[in-house]
Length: 333
Image (cartoon, rainbow, N blue to C red; front, side, top):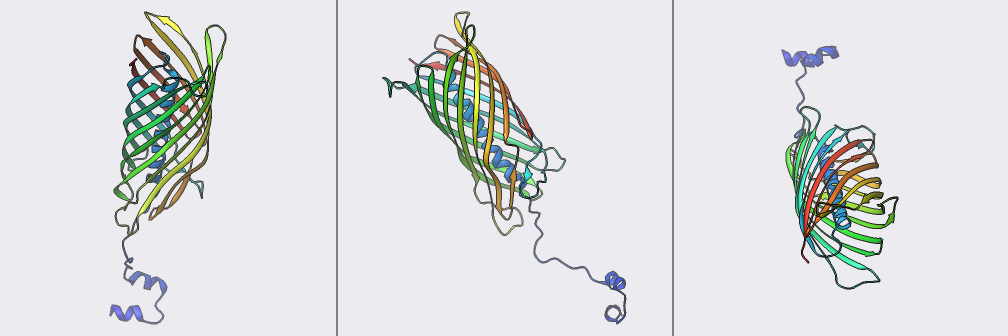
């Protein structure tokens, strides 16, 4: 009788809809959200850039002069981000928080003699970093990344003028949880920096160090599968940046050692930024490209030991970051 009623001519559309059997979709339904992997790889790029800034500061801030140095450095950072924007629509994704902790050891040595009328310092670092990212929305996304950090730099200086080039590599893995389910991927890439600077005399016993920097990072995941997808996905983030940094410092004799307090201000512009996912998860994202930074810290040299600590904040229209770093080094010769 039901079959007859469904087929009877003249039955209204409403009645047909009422008695029509449900339609079963063909194949699995996959909630393909590309946002979380994009956030993860772009945050890894920022970690590498921050590690690069710390490494540059170490090469320029050794208060004990030339020689060979080894020592550890630890960093903690917290970021509040308003969310990446979809490059096609301008819609903003979920706001998120990032907590980062990293520790690495570095070694520096000055080559004997002069080269092109100046001195040369070579340095290397190796360490570990961890990132934890969480959406501010309940039930949103979260991700963790564990990374190996390694790199090298070359500093050339003559009098008050210097130039420095460095490269830092990152290699690790990430685990994510979001609307796609739980999944993981490997992530790797590099950060490069080229710096030119000069130190000028300032009023009283202060000095002003000015430096210009060109930086680049390129981070990518391997191909990974989200639950229920037949096609793999891949995430990547790449960007260039140009910055100008001024550091005001002085040298003070204190309790048998030398204290170097400093204040730092910096402006950075990011360009050619590309944050994207492809494959089963596909999307392209962008964020604010102008950053300001303020930092206060000190280096203290006593005998063969150098100690340093600093606190800083970095801000853009989309995010704010606060961090602490502390380190020590020993002069070997």
